[in-house]
Image: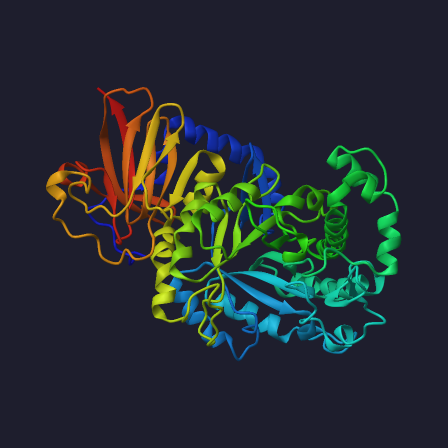
Length: 557
């Protein structure tokens, strides 16, 4: 992040004036039409959608989450001093923190929100927004964060029974006692937030965590079997375009998994809906993923959770859930991109609430934001002494934080502006792929942008005279990426990290970069720093490890 400077000889230009008149008019018209709704609930965060794009409104304007999710057991006052320094070092604007059912209701009917109050106060002091993760009936399929009076009472709160009659350590969604107990605690949490957080430091809620069941495609208890033998609910039949019948009749080989996805989805929807009646904050669920390309036996992943193959079921089952978000711990860039494609839907805001903490994951912030994503959050990068390697970094040290901080430092000063552009118009982006090859993005009908990596700022590695040049250092792990936002038909905002951006013409026209401004954002305004030309543009636009933001005007001649 650039240090704040007094502007003396620099032109400080409101960002809107830098846009084309057409885009300014578009934004003004959209703002005017949305003004009554925003004014009525200006302080309540909410998702909005337009033309298949989404935004999270915070304080009445689109918000880009530059997040960090703390470790599972960092949700105690004693651990917060080990969290805030990491958040500051990474330049985050949003912190994701678990709130455990056992933490707020250790004894049935007696509620303790002392940690919530400490967290709210310290988040405000650190100028950070919060996402609260409700670890209730399920955390990674199990009840480990439920209070003992729940997780040790199988009679009152039954667990999943497999087809072989084995008991799994996952609570069944088919029993009202479990639902009502969880719902009661969640409602109390939301009621407390309504009173304790009038300014909405909390911007999102995640009810439950990575739902589903491992080593069991569904619950086969007598109660579940009776429901499975009955008719598929009409709501789901209609949503899926099916003919009425039993689960087996309607869904065939997928019946077991669809039944369980519906059952869990309805359960979570009940909890979310009850919480929203107290305080209508936006809510999302997160998904423990299955392979994005290949068929997998449901016994090998968290069956019934919101995996890509049952998104339609979850959408029908849980209308009170505003977004379904993937937790990404796959290292392969093709798998990451395919997952983003699957969850990037006109009816679903895209963001990644969990991604691995190792360096190779950081580049994917450009893939997420290039798809109009609203946020990104690596998991477990606090200083409480835990590492989830091999899913993430081997050691959570200053370098592990810096691997993400280099991107957040770049994006933080322009986070609101990027969020607005992503909601109002066209954006593109990509992180460096595993094969490290250049790739070309089509920027509408007229222009292209080719992203390449491993280049120095001068020359090109494919030219013979560059053959003896050293390779760029620190390139053991792919870490580059770039973002592009369209300001007008021929104007673009460019930023990125260790990437070269080279423009082209779709129609083969002769063109040039008529103007390349380097600048930065301060208080929502574009500040012109200098023009690039000559050596700075002869070999494309080379984005380095220094935070750089460019405005580029293309023209034909």
